[in-house]
Length: 207
Image (cartoon, helix red, strand yellow):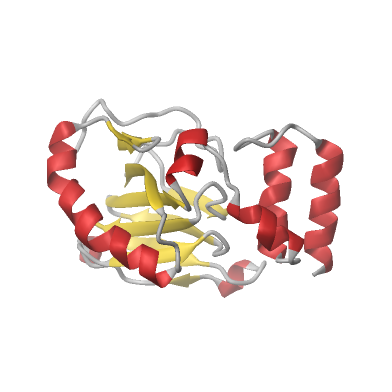
């Protein structure tokens, strides 16, 4: 658990040290022991459920990571969307009795709308890209396994987010917001275009 494999580079959400370990990245396993442990569960259970639940037969796992929250390291993950993933699955790894806090949902802009929920080891939370969420751990050490799923093998290979295009055209505010972020920062196959980003942010706010 204290493996030096945990990355401490800046997190994409809050720029704090990430404390993440990736046994699978960009659709490729980098850890054979983790592949033996998780590969069957992902292929036989998690991925079939995601494909059926979200009517996405071509959905493909792009990344799997273990995230650690420990004293003196990371304790929070600011509220955010997983804008690079069509679907996210979070598998609980730590017993909740020794932990205060954890994963929360925030359906409204204000912090008062946050809802924390208890995750036992083996519990799986699955959500789409448009769910605002975060983590805050006040006490204890929390581990979780996170799977990021894209809509096709091609979007995994190309590191793109094509599902936003049709949804944005239809006026989906969350798709517009996430697409604006991609243009603002030049991410996931979108060129850096601040004017386009501002236009999309305005459209998102107006929905």
